[in-house]
Image (cartoon, rainbow, N blue to C red; front, side, top):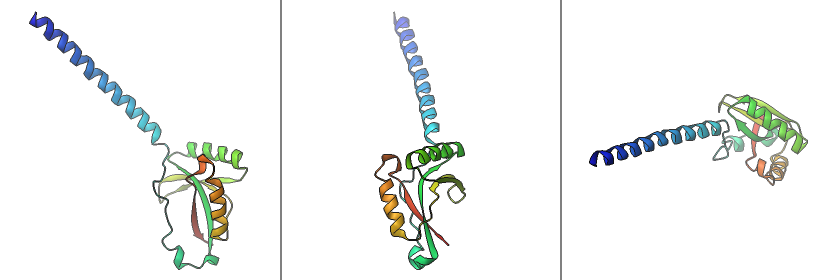
Length: 135
């Protein structure tokens, strides 16, 4: 009788162990899908912006960043349809991501902020942020 209980116990333990590995594999697959998109936790700030006169800068609005060009291009296509604006996809080697930005270059930060704020009203663009660059 003890052997029967031992066999049942071993059967249960083996089933539990085999199930946990499939759960881990499923979780790993979910994580690999999530790794295609990178969402910044904090919006990067240009630390030198205050030191450069505004007339020497232009401002861009970035609406997304992706680990694969394919995902960036797909998102850019969706943006073009929804926003009816030109967007570009480029590789940013500083962050090793493909970034999606509006083509429009704004001469003042206030103009860029107004467009960004309007974009953020749409859930898909709530993470849009402004970048500054030298002219």
